[in-house]
Image (cartoon, rainbow, N blue to C red; front, side, top):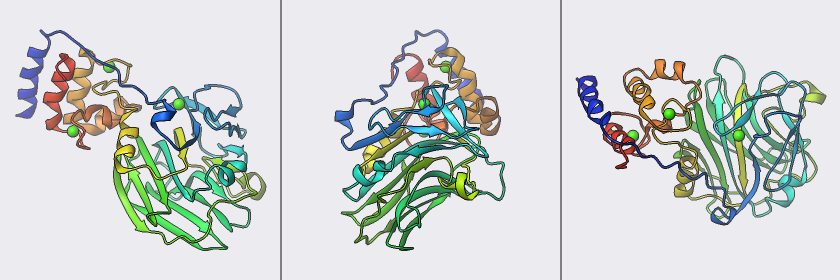
Length: 316
Ligand SMILES: [Ca+2]
Ligand SMILES: [Ca+2]
Ligand SMILES: [Ca+2]
């Protein structure tokens, strides 16, 4: 019934004019105070991953592959894939407020049944300080901070990050509020108390993205097993609304085939996403669900049909 109604509505759309405004990406540092590092992975080739904000450039370990990203290019982390040798000053000089937000886009392959992967690793040698963000084999996130030997404050996500599509993940440590929080696709997923009284930053170990940063020495490889893009760190806890807006800053509303514009070619993919999400993700593996969530309620469903049409016809 819904498909029939949708089909009728889209015939009407085909007679109308098109207007579409590309969302701004939100690069303006003054609007997002506290940004301290940002790895865009947009180089697309070479052996370095530049931090375009803080200058904490990392080196690609042999085997790290460039890949299409949620924005420009990204990096694939399987086997020995890793951005490493991120200068140790990253966490002991820029995160001195004892509050941090890590934000990252992830594309989880989900085909490794028994492996837990590292997203970001800033633990000190000897594990007496630092923090780490990881993902379990079934897609659940874990974020923890360490202060003093083995004094771990940890939070696990309630939800699993879906495999085979892009997801925006944010991990926060908020000293003032005494809380750890995790967000998935702009929505708070988990929160827990964190009565921290000691620094969590380490002062003598490099950081890494996508793998255990000691693996070249100890052989304990822990690849994320997927693609990571747009890694950001802030020296404060972003608000719930800021996390939501940061996620939305990357969304190309209505661009269901991810060709960079919204036009009539997006109608059939939009209908497919509504009627058969699995088939949609098979056909458009690089497209985030959020592109179809036109009304910003966190799901792609029939409530997005009218906003989609409005956007397509320039009325949205
Ligand atoms: Ca990128
Ligand atoms: Ca399109
Ligand atoms: Ca929606």
